[in-house]
Length: 254
Ligand code: PGA
Image 1 (cartoon, rainbow, N blue to C red):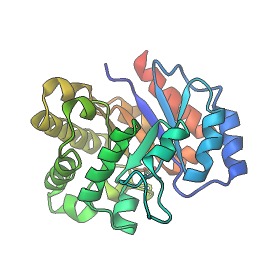
Image 2: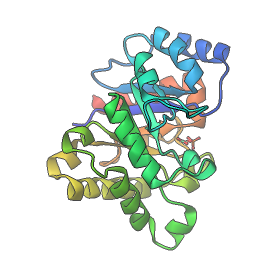
Image 3: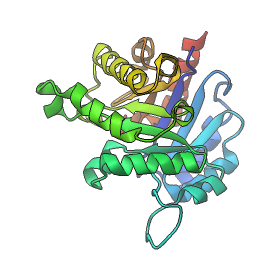
């Protein structure tokens, strides 16, 4: 059985005080990390404060990294720096990075290699635009994104990657994909991993759903066969909601 992973993507929200309040409230309430991976993903300058206070069962991650390890890249954050802060996770290719900051599938691939090189656990995001879904191009888009992201990634490294399926039309819109749609696309991504690697890898790799997940819909999403967790934006900002959603994942393991 795949261990569920619930990750709160805070995006560009929370000041230091707000983040410290959150961590104080949730860090002691997280389920055993042997059963559920609970993660918060913050703006880079907060990471050090969060790692110091994460406790035994919460992990911390960055929302982005640059694909070079050092150099004249003003404003970027490096993998070695994240690693030196004992950050565990890093999000790669979030749709906001792709759409607002013009990141390409090639950037995503280079960043995935950078995360692996620096021993960070990557959460690789993929997902289609509404036009793609309407014109029945979802699988084509997912295939192109996944194939390029994993180019030259060994089986050994690929098996530790977390994939997040986030249909762009469902992010921050209050419009969640139905559990059937979410499961179908996560299942399709699993079949792509079988094509790229093999069946055992496809069966062990963890695939999250993301897009307007909240306490009211997380149970039905996590009950689906191919959904191993959630990447949560808006609803993860509230400590009580985050605790509720992590506990929903724990229930699934019992
Ligand atoms: P949302 O964001 O939960 O606010 O829709 C999800 C995400 O962008 O990861």
